Structure formats: structure tokens, C-alpha cells
Length: 131
Image 1 (cartoon, rainbow, N blue to C red):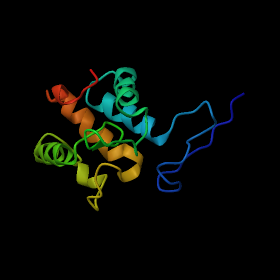
Image 2: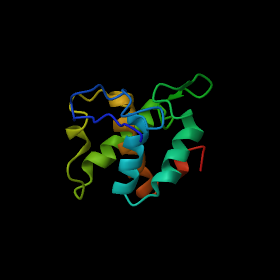
Image 3: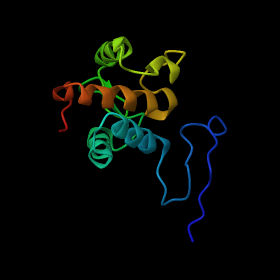
């Protein structure tokens, strides 16, 4: 039987493993959660993160200046985040998940996964190299 660790919100760092080696990272869990919340296929959305960054919230591409789980150019991330926060149908807003405005690498890619899922669900998927 696979013994899983139970994560209590706030009790472990976001980048910590949520279970055994067969488990998923916080980054993967966040990506899958936000994909589902916006009606995207969680498996497809995680494969997008794998294509963009090999699943690493700290990945950096010096040739393009992109970084993070979903390889954003910083200005694009902040623009999309502003669009997401202005969406009156969204409850709660992203600020609730990243109140300090730390941005793309906050919480091991959770904020970035949220912005990315929202963007794909709202027609901005053309911004990504991986499709």
C-alpha cells in the first residue's frame, strides 16, 4: 500500500512533495487544479507545462527571456494577471492566492498555473510555443 503524506494547507512549503515518489509535486497539483477549474483537460494542461519547462517552476530560457512553469515573458504574465483580476466573474481573484504580488514563481508556480489556465480558457493560448 502506498503511504501518502497529508498536506495541511499552510503546513508545508508549496514546493514540498505531497507524498511519495509516485506522487505529484505542488506545481503539478496546482496546474491540474486550475485546469479543471477553467474547464481544461488537466492531463493536457500538465503536458503543456512539461513541454514548456519540464515541469519546473524555476526554469529559465536565456534565449527568449521566459521563465517559470509555463515560460512567461514577465510583461506578458503581469498583463494577463491584470486581465484575470479584472474579470468580474472570477471569485476569488488571484490576489487571494498571491497577496504579496510576488508573481510567476510564487508558491512553486501555483500563481502562474492559475494565470495560464485562465489565459488558455479565455483565448490566449496562441501566446505559448507548445500547443
